[in-house]
Length: 315
Image (cartoon, rainbow, N blue to C red; front, side, top):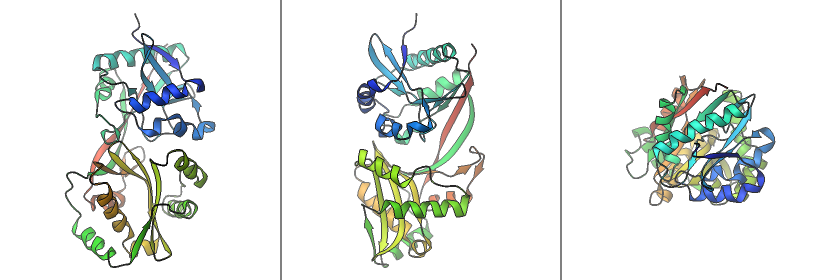
């Protein structure tokens, strides 16, 4: 007998979905439909809602592509979002029933992104055990860097020097930064260094900031009126995440990055725990971007793994 009834998400279930994510143990604002659906034209949504005795117990942000169910490709991280006090044995059953659902809907494989603990309200790695115990392959492991604002080891010597220097450079912050100017810099840096561009357009950044004013913020650093760079921040639960963190040559010379990090530590030190800098690996986690990792480690950041699993589904 099946414990859960799995139902594919439809737009009419949006309010129920969002309320569940809001109340969930491991919900985060990226899983609200207003965030997920801003790029709905790029993905075939196949998110799942798991009910037990008529009550919603879990949701999975997901899309379908070429016969594979992806833990959503448009999100940095994902996995099952769980109701309070969701037991490990229930989660094991949920994965089994997800595979039954997949086989019955012409899905040949599952790609699952495990959500790192820094983003959760209530850390729970039970899905990592279920994945390992259920024959999923750990095929990618990105290394991300963060530091604990409640237990920070301090800046490296060069970063301390640059932070102290930044205080003498007449720098200032604008928490309502010019998004078009900032994203132009982001794309300039990404094209020149990595021959790529930002995932988000300026219009999408503005849209998400309008929808989630408490969670998305562009903060820029200036010397008088001279633009130096900044960050696009995601803020929720117990974390601050720098989705983009970019500076121009003048900003680097004037230690604007150190100035901004010092500000974030001071502003959020009493209310948040984790400051996350994001991934520093390439080639599906196989290659460490040594320069980027060293830059983050200089602030006192340590690494955590962001894991990706896959499994073929037999029909």
